[in-house]
Length: 124
Image (tube, rainbow, N blue to C red):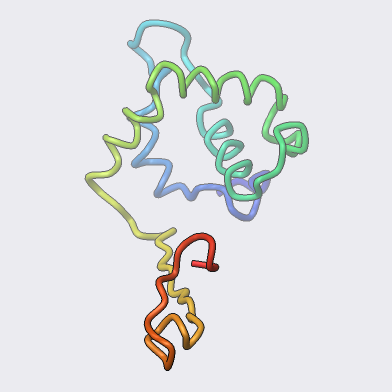
């Protein structure tokens, strides 16, 4: 990986699997995109941090250009197509399992006084 990359940018291995599925390849209609990797890393940074577009590090490019391209890919279905292509070969690198649980008040679990249902109005 290049020294200019950030800590959480996609690896060379992931990029080699993803690059061929992105628009802007040589031989496709339209412009050739030489910055697809930087764009994908920028979008992943935004998704990972939850920061507004304006707070994106300048090393990823102009925030407004990245935001416009992201919206354009959403509108024309590019993200769905890419996900469909790469979903057949998951790497499980970012797999997360939610192990949270909720406790209920004893009265809701059939304690003395009858079983009380837990609805939205009762904290459920």
